[in-house]
Length: 231
Image (tube, rainbow, N blue to C red; front, side, top):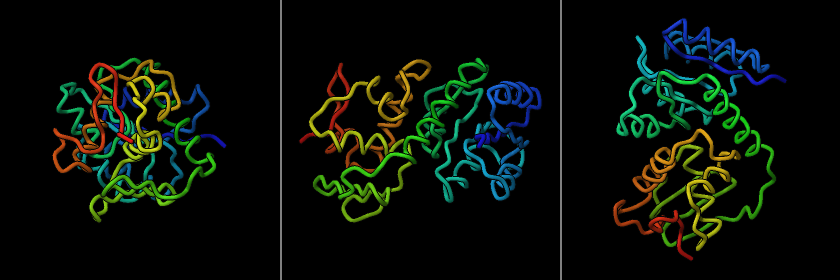
């Protein structure tokens, strides 16, 4: 069965270019001009990944991503002409799995699509290992339910955020650098991904689970090396 990719962008030239590259790789491609049309397609079609532009009429990519995340953990790659760190943080904080700035190399975007689909496939096909809850002080991670609670309150994490937290919590005391986090979570060699993006995901997790994100209780920074959760 072919994976189906939904391209959401109000620029027909960008849709055409991406459609050609994705179709040549054997993917089934759907297109939408804005967020509202994308939501309609998701209701009626089986989509495996979304390439989502931010600046669009009617319903922009940020609001569309928030709406999609209410119902689904489908991989989302955001496209934007905005390349400031704050713009990337905003995009990833809404639940996107990756963020690509325009203009972009279609081959790089294609590599990111493949990486996201590989990660999704790996997660779906992997047998449950140690299904018991991971409890670290007031932090509870349930692998089966894909849920997190902190001090008794539910915490909503994106699939990428959950995977990073689960990785660090499962290997407490082990320091993971950026490359190792990427390889373990995305199932891909660290090639096109930027260190800053991984750091943004770590920052988002801290904002959600830490009382004082700048003085983290759980995810510790080992300066010049990487990140870990203490034993």
